[in-house]
Figure 1 (cartoon, rainbow, N blue to C red):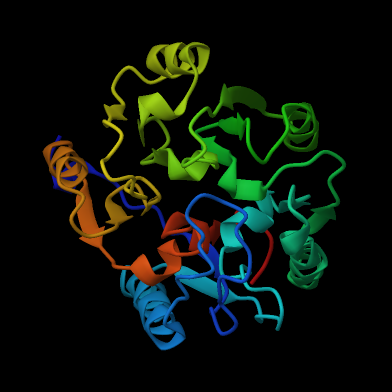
Figure 2 (figure 1 turned 180 degrees about the vertical axis):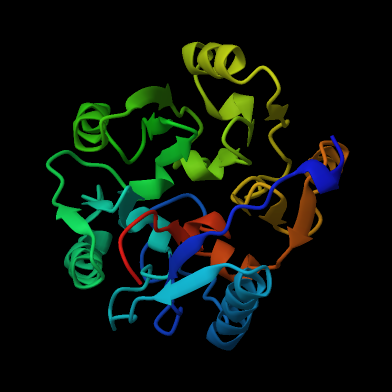
Length: 274
C-alpha cells in the first residue's frame, strides 16, 4: 500500500510541559537518580514533539504542570478517554498518585464525563484502543481486575495481555497502534498466551525483535498515516515505509530518563469539547 492510500485521522491530544521534570525516584528500570535530565533540553525536545503535532494538523491541549509531580509530563498514564468519557488512572506507585485529581479536574472542566477508577490501572500506558477493541496490559503496573472495570465503563471488548519483561513495564513501551487494524509490537515483551492472541488478532502486525540495548522504539504515536517515532529506529522505520506509513522522527531522549517517550507524553482525547 502506498503512502497516498494511508488516511490521516485528525487527533486531539493532551500534553504537559516538563517544567518540573526530574528523576527523584526509581520506580521503573529506566530511572536512575544518578542520571538527572537536562531540563532545558527536555523542554526543547518536548516542544519539538508538541510543534510536530501542530504542524501535522492535530490539536493539542495543555494541562498545567504541578511542582513536585515530576512525571506529569507523561500524560498518557493519566487515564483513558473514549466517546467523551474520561476514566482516570489509579497509579500503582505512590510517587504518581498526586497526579490523579489534576487530570480528573481538567477533564471535568473540558466537558468530559469523568469516572474515578476503583482498580489499579495506569491509563493509556496500559490501555490502547485499536478499532473498537481495547488492548489492556497487566503484569507490572495495571492489575488484571482493572480490565473488567474498563470494559464496563466503555462498553467495549477488552483483550488482556500480560507483560513479562520489566524493562517494558507498560503496554505502550511494547506496542504501538498504527491504525484501526494494525499494530507494531515486541513479541518478547509478552507471555506466550498473549503473543498467541496478538498473532491471531493482528496477522499483519509489524513484529520487532527486542532492541539491544533496550530502547523505547515502539513508544510512538500514529494518525493512520504519519507515525511519530524516535530517531534511528532502523528496522522499524524501514518496515513503516514499506507498509506505506510516513515515519516522522522526533528525539525525546532526555525524557527517556524517566522511562517514557513519545507516546507517554501524549494522551488522546476522544469526544468532549475543546
